[in-house]
Length: 373
View 1: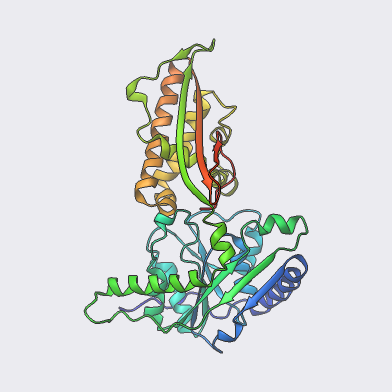
View 2: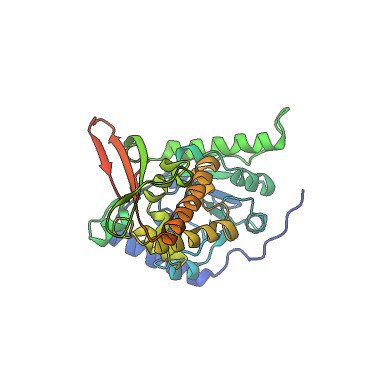
């Protein structure tokens, strides 16, 4: 199979990127304590694919700053960038890719860079939050196969919460562990189909990345256990008299809708990145106006239906993502029914969990911090 050659040259913006890298390393040494291990594992030249784990913006920053090349990073292209970082990212430049689908245009652009002897950085699990959804993504092995480029796994640590620590001048320790070179992925392996070979290659790559993540980070991201979700939906008349919710108005999988609300970064993306009016859903403890709730739910559903069908399923897997979307539809319809009857609506998502090594049950009755799971 042939691929489209690159639409971008490699390297591009060499002077600008060189200045940005110098300034970035200087700032990083002042604001944090970067620890780079295994730099000797990097080959002298490309083509090369750098593969890392992903928690936040800083992994990409460290990858750009601390390898010896002006790399091209593959990053999110299906939603606008966080406006806090967008000017910096757009100035450096990157290859946008629509996550959750096989974006051949973006992948072919990356192949073109590699065929020029370039270096590409990629985070195959970027934006995926649920362990059940963290299956191997074959895009990274496909890139290696198409370009005959070797790969280098990189495990980052200390990233979670680092931006907040930097803003308080606490100089967090940031770790970048560079592994040994993985030969180019082959798709002609015994009796395996090409799909099976690429999936096997992707699993192997991500296992090597995971092995390089510091142990303290693995423990931190697995500190939550026995996580459960519930949803209380209360309907009241204007005088506060309770109204029994008709059976046909019940949420079919309330635990999934509750989970949606207890991942507040989802709605943050709608307000901060997409600039859409969903504030009523972010303010559930105080918002009881059914029209406001229904209108906000309509905005989310319109985006999920007409603009980005993979937004939830990419992050949570198909079953959970589809259940969340269906729950939003049911909540919207119930809020419209309440509006027509002059009722008020209270939506109370409840999250219960324990921490590893502690049998105490913690209960959150409204969206709290995004849990590390």
